Length: 254
Image (cartoon, rainbow, N blue to C red):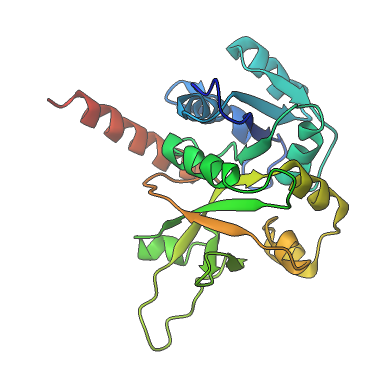
């Protein structure tokens, strides 16, 4: 986090306690630290971010942030993390907001910077939405309903997000893209998001970026390198712990 002269891009990490698949997930320990701490660290390592804050409606998460020295903003209850980020953004004097999901402990700081750069190249007063995606290399991940897949147009705009393995490989071997929990918004985009009702696709899939698409707005995708994983379940956390140990061991090799 070394941006001192460029646009004011703030990372917001939405965290809630009541995950149906993993209650208390933001405070689940990975290598001795809560998941939200790992995500916050990745934000601090990004060059283009001026500040990183946690947004939550839970006093347990707020107290943990205070103990960790992480700025935390309290919000009301919301249907999605982006709704929470939109409320938080009203209290931040930012040129753009980058939503970094609290269950992406291995998110690459370069990916955060790539979203920031895409926002910086867009008009500040326009409705601009940017979503980072990465190529899926695991066949198991392509059929995992916890992994959201993205399909894009030749323009780079998203056509659809789904938990199903799309596109269906009827006559070819398609490249599957994972939608990362990494979104960028201009303030106008967040205001618009808050004003829109959830559509049937968003409600069915539980994917908030579908709200923009269902209401006729573009979501620009940015392809980034990613070899991490999102933590959606306790089993994911065990996998993440193994991955963290492997990374620590590799870092010690000469």
